[in-house]
Amino acid sequence: MQGQVAFVAQMINAAFELPRRARCVMIVMDVSDERRAMSFLKRLFGGGEPRDSDAIWLYVRCDYCGQKMKIRVDRRFDLRPDYEQGGYRLDKEIMDGTCFSLMMARLRFDAGQRIVEQELEGGTFLTRPEYERDEPQEAENAK
Ligand SMILES: [Zn+2]
Image (tube, rainbow, N blue to C red; front, side, top):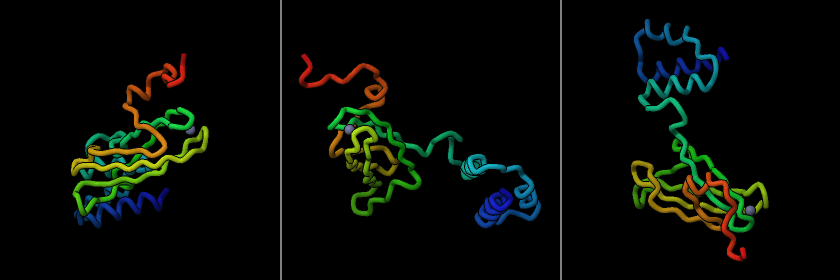
């Protein structure tokens, strides 16, 4: 824990070259766990909402067994810049924990990290309401 606090303080100091007095404040601060440290850093860097603002949620349904899933994508680590077309790309393998079939998601994002294109091999993208709806899927062969 101590090491982590020191590390965070060092990062901040390195980034901003804060005056000596401010450094002392940083080191004494009780940044006792990683989450708090990160949310502190986010506030410092002006990252907006302290909650899970780095998450992009994908809602999908397995074409094989119909299982619905919610997948978290992290804007900071999962998106990679698309140097050819601009914006960002994401290629993600999604494993269905129920039938173990593998889906392959390919998405394109604009510069503001909004989804502009999405395709899913082996599955179907759902909207959030579709994901949250509890009723069973309308199967093609029902009645
Ligand atoms: Zn499945």
